[in-house]
Image (cartoon, rainbow, N blue to C red; front, side, top):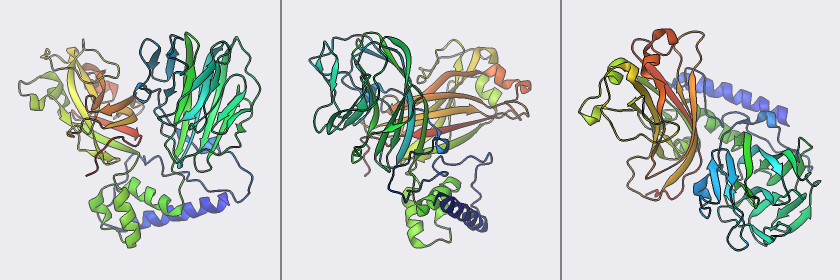
Length: 449
């Protein structure tokens, strides 16, 4: 079955290439061969009744983080967030409600996702690892034994170090108990949205799949909790395949990866139903690549004019989930702070390149007048090599964009002096080539009028 599906996709890909090649002005493929992450590896359902785990080799690399904004009940004195690491500082949580920390990864009926949890130490059973909705709550029934209780009709699924599985139906024995007071436990989690399955593997053991089906009617998120002071939970090795779709949607995904602009889609010699689907999904994609050439680089970086309109440059917008995303470039002083924060107010720097750095940011939905919208995304920011043997220079960000923080990136991405030196391989004809690749989660509180 899988072999037939792969062959069908190969034939479809060849046919689409021929169609696109026959249409004037549609040579929109990226020069570097990149494409949408959901272009490849669309899944097929097995004809056998026995459940088969998804092949991890078919999943693409992913990145998400523990998101404070998705964990609104948490206060800073109790929990600290450090990207993919969360540290539980106190155990004096209110009443019997346990702290629930959610990851920024949205899990739906179309998502297959894998991630690994690292527990540097296991002290007792007071750790919970699983998935839940934005409203899921965890309770501990006894502080002495640190026993978790998900509660009836609570959209939460997960395991605790005592080997128990917590589901909507109750508590069941699931796997061997973790060895307490030992170091470095790993828990692998595999979420299979299309089959409504959740699996766990403990310390490189065999994947065990829970019998109860997951309710995917609501969006779920990775979830962890701990009642131990100074306990640390780390997530790593994330992988994902979004929207394992039938062949028609595979066709649409491939076409959109080549020609995402609506004005080009209308010229394609395709049936009306496909054109309508293409038009409706042209801006409703979870990821995109933005390319931007920064021309007259040395002039832009050397002088900080009094006219604010020319102290930064913006790329043309690219749309993800109908939100406009842009590259934002600013000349910054070398002394300014960096490390994944928004651009600071403009200062008048010296004119020497040695005193300047490239401020490199992603801007999202900046012209919106709405105040409640938010969209979580991860991205790779890249200065592209223009010299053989030199690798692209990349840095990563993860951020929840909102009205007050609609841009995010690095005030000191690379020094202007380093970029301006042709020997380093990043400048040609006084032009720097920039790109970003963005993976976004569906936005919240967006007015679609």
